[in-house]
Length: 293
Image 1: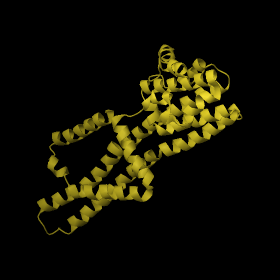
Image 2: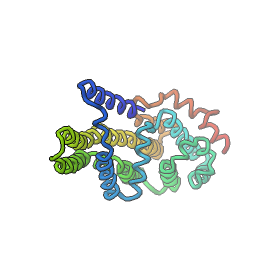
Image 3: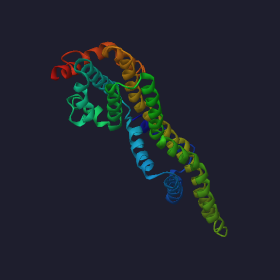
Image 4: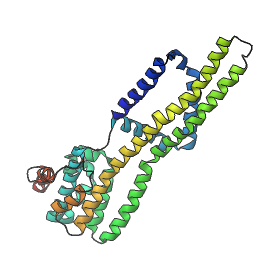
């Protein structure tokens, strides 16, 4: 919602200031100038990006506007899932965990935390590396190197919408000039008309320059930055999985391994040790998995 509030403040300040200076707001409404700028921007966006990135950019914009980054509750759920998997592995060995990671949709552990299960990429990441742990042949440093490589790939994929939208934002001032030039060309064809009509045509042309600059620096560039922030927050969940499982592979007890993961969460969103212990205590999510086994 911060994006919407900020956009309203920016528009109100700009249009209110223009009106206070004696400007007529109706002059700014030049729909065909906006069609030229918006259509050109959309066309270049489609040219520059594959279908997957175009679709993902739409999802990323919605996530940014609605502030869909993981919150404390999501972090607690993920830590609880990891704790239950590690407890199962310690108590029941490979057979106790294999069914959960081979088919997470039917797993009682993952079903208990639908927000984790619905994140298919995160669930797959968790299951894949838990499976590597139970195989028992890979060394921790080899797993860490593989995780880092996959995380780099995931980060590149997650931030493609940021780069795509930021590229459009950078092009908008130039597209605004294109719209303004076309407006000036139209005005030049009316030099024999009255000064009032000619002034209106020149004013309409200049709206193109204004619109291109404002849409670039006032809308799309901040939106792209917000997308980057949200997507990097989403990547934090993968880092939690990585640090927790690596600590467990190194011999840490499940509760200690969770602390390695918890410490990677940004301070403002990080649950306390007491909250994590409450979530993973017998009778909570962590205890249910062992009892069920």
